[in-house]
Length: 447
Image (tube, rainbow, N blue to C red; front, side, top):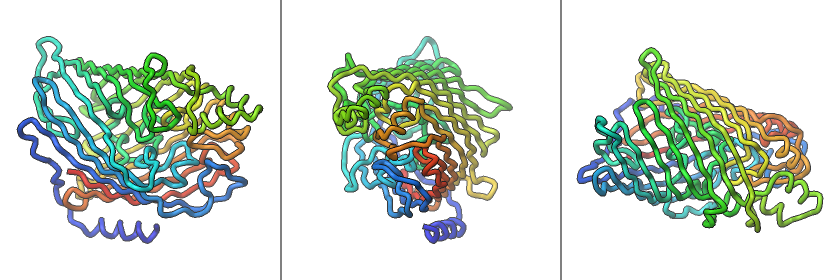
């Protein structure tokens, strides 16, 4: 992997910057875009007193490669309405099959369960805008799942169908897209938000957005998985569902834009509690233990998870921005959809390459600290396994991750990134503290 980094950096340094050519014709009310992303990762070996079935491999691991490819199609239907349809193909695997680190290492593999690429429908939804009063209309440019149109500034937008709930919530200009920004799960989003999704990251339901001047309020109700981190979704919506509320405030400091977002989430699932998990370990209840680690469907409902999140981003000038996230959930019931993080805090910096005459390049560095509830710790320490982590025992410590990347625009809508992550206490375990050095090369095409 070291020679790959050297070659990539040499290639970046010798290529003259040219303006990206990624706009496509959006005439006649259509929008169409395409992306393809390949990520190759490896990590160093590290000392470990023991390992379990969900542990990160402690010897040198190479060759973990993921691929995703998406076609973004959209069509204007009538005034204020459009339909969007996204076929997607994904395949490959993450390091240790995306297990062993709660802040997992590749955001492109957290929903990829098969080595062979598979084609599926990622999104299929309708969106309608309703103007509020005598508001001004502004032009929006053609973009991913956005038809070029005039949109009312003050409006209510309703989206219904299949989508990723993260398309709407927990946005961040500097850290939200693992295809061009940070790869780590706990940096591309709020790790403590066990956000409702199937194993590939998608759900179905309704999202309402209210835009009023510098404020936006989002409210949604969507489906949850029937089995932890599995493709099967729960269709008994009266008993299993997830609601999320987000309040966003946009502002400026010294004429530089900033945004603060506050999120509240509440989910009802078939998830058992960690207390039930402890009882299952004591009685060798293999059925309930299989439910917890995502290998069986629970017979009963009753799982509840309440969470809070705070996100902020602030431009310091036209080229430099900072961001931070804080997240918490009650940690009483087992993780069901995203990852095993109950508390998280992150801080990062993003810099465009304008000063070295490469304005389409972006460099970023960030750190994140993750934790879990006492009930969650006790379950793992007693030998329990979730669907992401579990070493068979636990000497608890906070999981700390530092990530740095450089994303370089090379030619013809192609970007190449070098990425490095330093992981301390993977899976919250001081007995496997590392640190672990993780290297990645990422290629991204978009037009």
